[in-house]
Image 1 (cartoon, rainbow, N blue to C red):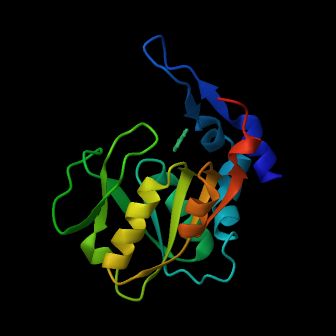
Image 2 (cartoon, helix red, strand yellow):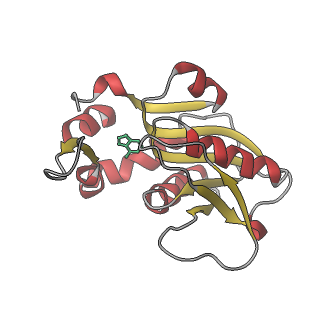
Length: 181
Ligand SMILES: Nc1ncnc2[nH]cnc12
């Protein structure tokens, strides 16, 4: 079963003596052929009646996970970028700012303004939703474009239930299934 495989392949790693906390290592998931084949359909199946027209997922892992879900859902894909991310964004972008994330950082997330249209039904996808800050900002980006979020699909959810409800979040794993960090 996929969720059991995700738990088996998940690791916390110690980044070194300067770090105060362990970080999650999801690389075992992407390396596993069965997980790679199954995560897209499994995330799309969390919203069986949602009829999304597009999947939006934030860099960096979203660039992998988003297309897997989009293929399964029969939609296209729009990447969401982080300001200060891998490449400087040029051209018309639609941005929203996040409150502080799980490490206290604020960031802006945005999509190419030409790639979302009024009436689009957006399935947001992320590997892990913790504070929900980034998903909240993406909800705003989608709404500002005149589109609607039909749901947020994640592999792991460790956010409070009220945040999950606000985000329309469904996840394959809760934090209780993972080993202690
Ligand atoms: N990969 C991740 N994304 C979001 N929150 C996290 N908390 C621990 N690992 C995380």
